[in-house]
Length: 245
Image (cartoon, rainbow, N blue to C red; front, side, top):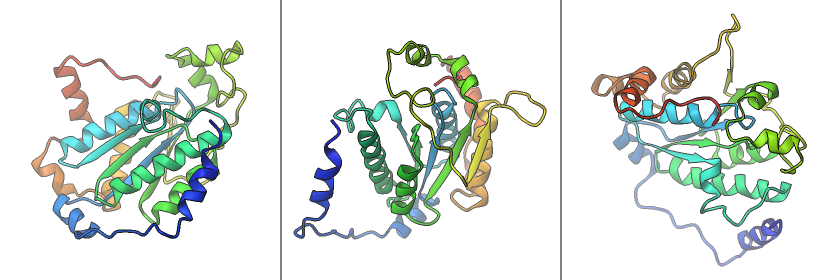
């Protein structure tokens, strides 16, 4: 498409558009939900495990009584962003739209989990600036290209290497790693042992709790943590998640 940004800029300058304030303030909604709204923004290469960890975290938060929503890069292109391609301009618009959607959730006191490659630093920084202090938590899945390519569950890296997909992040299009993310998750620990999704989710959950987005008291009246979430999946015979998503 590659022509959406100029149209959006023109629309935003319309002098006849005014902001309508709601009757219920964000703080009141957060008190009712007993949580603080925020967006947990997962970024990293394709195959780094963003969606897997986001799903694990969402289930864990749900079992603690938190209200969440999950936005996934592939899913939003089926609807909200179905008219966007993968040129640099459309990728920027893709992230801008998602940032605006997450802001709507955050302003309602909901914890939004956003899983997007979001390869360009400037696009992520714009979302951070739009949301404001404390509302944007950047989680960087710092997984090497060779590990992501070895996983390649969707076969996308193979297609990119064969020249059948152009502009693929990490192959012929750059990925700009975060300089100072709130949380960095790596595929292996200090002993070079693989780190499982529930451990990564627990790291994020601990951050959310220690910074006041969710409270320890929530766990007293709900199922506790990522480990319980994984047990639930097993009990229901749901498929085991892996890092390749």
